[in-house]
Image (spheres, rainbow, N blue to C red):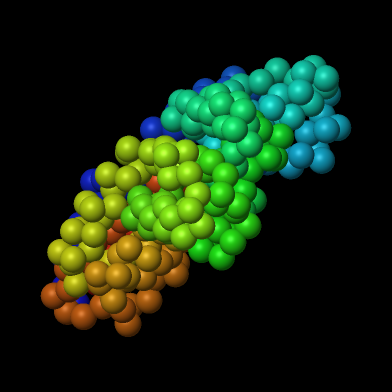
Length: 294
């Protein structure tokens, strides 16, 4: 069976994740252990590699008992409460919050103060429980509505001012749809349309991948999408591939590849999420090339 394999050169870690992993590895090159508050990246294969170097993933309950240690804060960012606990426990912080997320946290905090002067409501378009979203609502002591699906919009009072921000890794198209629905609801109740503000806070590096990936998926007979199952960005991008190429398959590692997915002469595109390391994409491509040669 002959396959023509191509790796999407736009796929792989985003800047924030690259920076976080580089900092973690730099520390682990000189130290035996590093405590990371949550997974640095939503990719089990990459996490296992880092664990071999001494990375230890901890949760909030474990952090509360940690004393005089080094605490690693990942690219997703953290709420102020995490920094407070770290200070009380005399933890030295390696803060790898993505600059894009950090800027978003500051914008949320600043605009919330302005919004509250007019009894307004803050909305965050994102995934319930996602680390970045937790960090954002923590900036306003939880006084925000998380909008994950259309039905969540029923919680909002549209007779009052509304500001909405998006998690940085969300689908730009879905965000636009949510914003249009909010405008319609404000209009339906005669609410203050001039007091509605939708902030463009999706990461430019993430949003630019959507149109490119769509074209990449159209170009190939089969798409092998490599991503961790916990990756929010991965789920969004995989669905995008499926929307234009029904022969799209999502895997975490080469071991999940099924030979029956392919036909002789297929053009195979290998791509992934912002949480997928380049080395893993290359490993999958090499496996497919060996399948072809075999």
